[in-house]
Length: 406
Image 1 (cartoon, rainbow, N blue to C red):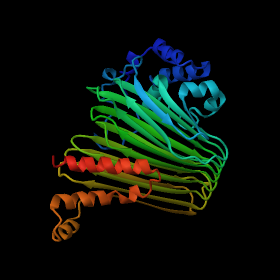
Image 2 (cartoon, one colour):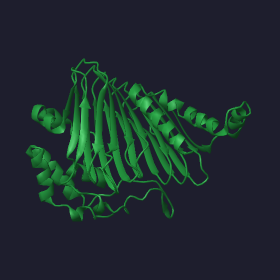
Image 3 (tube, rainbow, N blue to C red):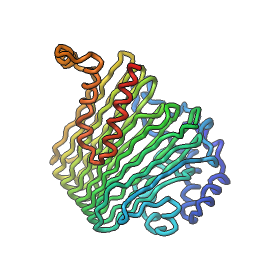
Image 4 (cartoon, helix red, strand yellow):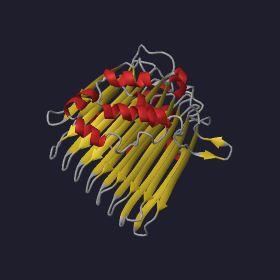
């Protein structure tokens, strides 16, 4: 593994970040432990075949991007009165014990090199706290990156019998030029009989390297739905994961991406069934054009105690160019015979018969192809309850399609 980032980081820098945010000693120690771990832990696992890694993260020149003491961003955090939507510093001030209980409880800070790097250096974040019995909608978080590197952290805590829908966006300020690095870690703690739908739209500049991990964990009869939409960045490594820890808990993990030029998307979707009567639905759809590349890995892991499990996975990639590349690796790991599970993945081009049918009825070829691409995303769009996210994603898809013919 590479230690090129670690060579440029110091304990003094980490202490300065922590002090500027007024953090307690326990969090500073977590940061320092993550910094020290960079010596020994590996980069996130990537799919590889003999002689070839499908995504090579270890060759990135992180020392050119990471500037830990010069992070800058604009952040909008909006939510209804019943829900507390706080900056990370505010949450530590008013809910330190809540933060301490849940920080790093779902995503181990030392999961891999990039999670440890993010834990050591994060300087901005949001905590969403939904008290017991509260039903809330329209929590919106927008992060605009205005620096060479930015490390962001989001924590959502939904207590028993509560519900919330959240939209988080990441974008790059107009004045920024040159290569950059963005990292985002999201933990979603879903209490008994609680429901969280978390949607993310990544629209960073196409000179940005992007790493994100979104991870939900459910209690009994809890449900966590995560929608991960990726339009921007030069290279994205993103993973959406769920632990179904409580009996009767559920998840939907939905992914959408659209790559063009030489963009690269490495997308993972994983669920762990750890309790009885759990249900998972994994749906990912992506389009790639020009010389873009996509890599997908999906995992459904059914534990020995996960009786009466239902788990379904499907991934479809549409290629608009002969120069684009797409690979998919869906996996089933079943350790319990009382399971209904399936998985599928397809890679293909726009259906020639559908295109012929539309053009033969007077639809111009370019418009017909665009309509078919928009229709391809419908199974994903139907899963998105957050109307603003659905409309934003549709708008960006249409912008991208329009740009093909400019």
